Image (cartoon, rainbow, N blue to C red; front, side):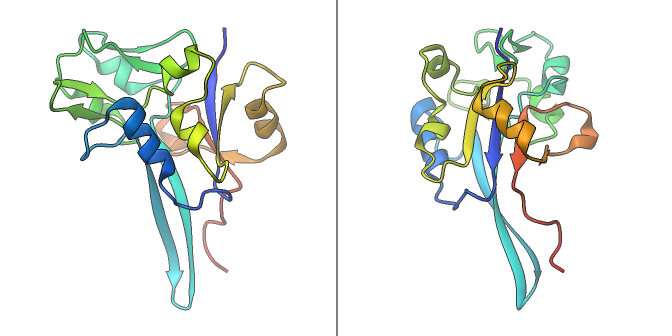
Amino acid sequence: MPKYVMVIDQSRCIGCMACVVACKRENNVPPEQFRTRVLELVDGKFPRLRSEMRAELCNHCDHAPCVTVCPTEASYKAADGTVQIDRSRCVGCKACIAACPYDARYINEEEGYADKCSFCRDRVREGRKPACVATCIGGSRIFGDREDPDSEVSRLLRRNSYRVLKAAAGTEPNVYYINQYPQKLS
């Protein structure tokens, strides 16, 4: 069984937001909500400023607190390593939203259920890439099976130092960042 992960090469993101638009279009995300976002982070003081673009989304954690707190088991860990939501079981209680350390979930007010990035599960089942990966003009998002040693994600994680967001939370996220900028300007 595959274990799907995403690698984000921060040196390649240009902040065009094509991934955000593709995700919204593919998944019918309401205008005021996001399954993925790109943040521009600025550090330093003028004239020594630096900025970086950081894509954020559900981290499909191995130890997902959103799954643990869900009273109806609508949030669950799928066999392919992704965290999914069974909309038919979701009662919109927002416990999963409060539990997520990545602020990656929201309530779809029109439909009344929690929603988040699914790694475009239907597209992946059809053998296609997630919409954000397929549309990324900089090639900064790479998706694949970490269990396959020949996959691009496995090669990238072997050859590069990487980090995850909020490692101290203990969630063991499955979105990895490579080629990140130094923490501070020197």
